[in-house]
Amino acid sequence: MTKQDEIAAKAVRNSTLKSLNLKRKLRIKQIKEETEAKIREINIQYAEDPERLRAKYAADDYARTERAKKRAAQRIEKEKKHLEREHKLRAYSLGEEIFSSVLQGIGACLFIAATVLLDVVAIDSVPEEYKTSYLTVYTCFGITMILSYIMSTLHHALTNSSAKEVFKRLCHIGVFLIIACAYSAYSLVSVTNVFGWVVTGIVWVTCFVGIMMYAIAGTRLELVNIIFYAVLGWAGLFICNQVYHAVTPASFRMLIISGIVFTIGLVFCTLRKVKFMHAIGDLILLIASIFLFFSFFFIF
Image (cartoon, rainbow, N blue to C red; front, side, top):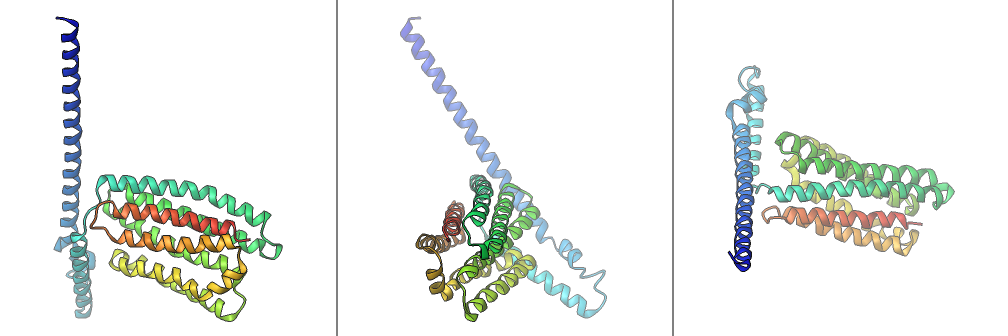
């Protein structure tokens, strides 16, 4: 065999190996997708099992009165409707879940550093009369950010449906606390009249209501929850003039950009039917969080 024949044979072998390797990867991907679909189907079948629903709401054995039976039947009907809605939703692909979980993990790491920086700013740069208040608010803001990103990471990383639901609720609850802490930070330095404090108080109460609603209802009220986020975020327009005159121009610009980017991110997160739209929404929301951090950083 000549040298040219050896080179040609080697090229054929390499090509064959690459082709087989590609086929192997495609087959593994196909098996993973089929497995995920099967697991989802089994979970749905379990969730919709009439015996499970009756056992969960004690419709037969423990609902002794007619009123209790009627209440149990209503709960079963509500859960059935919720399961029907869940069944219609597109399941996230493995790639989407990996992207989102890694992204949220990065967000948690970034805000560990961000919290330290904000506390340093509170100690070194904030006027003495605001120092303790801002140190508290910045620390609470940073901790809620970190915990929210950790909860979101676990929500996307875990495969157990019950665990995913729990961490999703905790993540959304964290967002309400982030909004409340953000309002507190700007209110401390800018709100000088009763109206401003009333707005801040309403935001805190609304955040508490939102937390209770999502903790109880979960994804049944997911769209309502997203509307809550948008309304609470832009309620700051009522004290916009006071904030504008109290903070630095850089801080105010970052705040406005953060609000706009947050809103865009929420829109993307609702487009679940389109592949990777939710993941892109998560990325946009992380960028918005970074703008909000810089708004706090340059507030004085």
